[in-house]
Every structure is written in C-alpha cells, then in structure tokens.
Length: 195
Image (cartoon, rainbow, N blue to C red):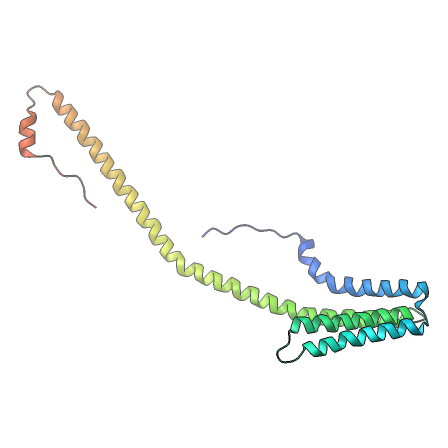
C-alpha cells in the first residue's frame, strides 16, 4: 500500500556502464607504461604475456563445458583478452595498434556486458510486475480488514456512548424524588446494542 520513495544519484546509475571502458583503458595505460619501461621489442616480455594470455584462455575453455560455470569462463576469457591487449600495448612500437585493440576490446566488452544488463533489466521488470500483481491480490484483503476494523471501532464507540448515556440517566433518575430502586430491579434494565 505504501512504497518507500527511493532516489539514485545519476553517478550510481552511470557507474556500472563506465566499468568496461575504465578496465580496458587501465589495461592500455598500464601496457604503455610497461612499454616506456623497456618492454618494447623485448622477446621475453612478449613470450611472458603470450603464455599468460594462452593460460587464461585455456582456463576459460576448461570451465566453459556443459557443467562449467559461465561466469568463471567469462572471467577467464576477459583476463586472457586483457593480458593479450597489455602484451600488444607493451610490445608495439607506435600507439596506433594498441589504440585499435583498445577500441576493439572496449566494443567487445560493451557488447558482452549489454547482454547481461538486458538480462538483469528483464529479470528486474519481471520481479516488479510480479510484486505489483501480488500487491493487487492482497490489496482487497487489506481493504476488507481495514473496513472490519473501522466497523468494530464504531460499534465499540456506540456501545460506550450507550453505556455512558444509561449511567447518566440512572444517576439523574436516582436523584428524582420518589425514585424506587427496587422497582427498577424487578422490571430489569434494558439490554445494550449487540454486534
């Protein structure tokens, strides 16, 4: 019946959308820093990044089987791609090839993330619809109970008013001259209102 009012700052809504670009940009920057520190045309550094990228890809393939965990496989493949991007960014002469790979990696990251965002949005909408339907189902029962409670309060208020009026009438009558309480007891008191 009453829903809390929630407000999300625009930065909170935007932050998850910026993560793929931030991650690929960070990998590119670290690769270029590594390039400036001597990784350019270093066969050992290129071999290291190739082995690490292939190892992460092998881990992704191993966990991508029918009974494997999709999140673990996706993480392994993302790590493999990140290591390959860092290796190329560190090994390459100019900036054009690393920027091209950065743009490609960012595009792939957003396309994969968009799939999960759509699924999450779809599940969130389904949950909201289900919750609204259940609220509608239970709103009738809630309204009936509110009416019943108000009715009981009114009946109790009327009974209290009747009892107060009867007590005042009896007190006033007792003060009248010639009042006989035994005659009243013989005839009986009127009954109060019933539910």
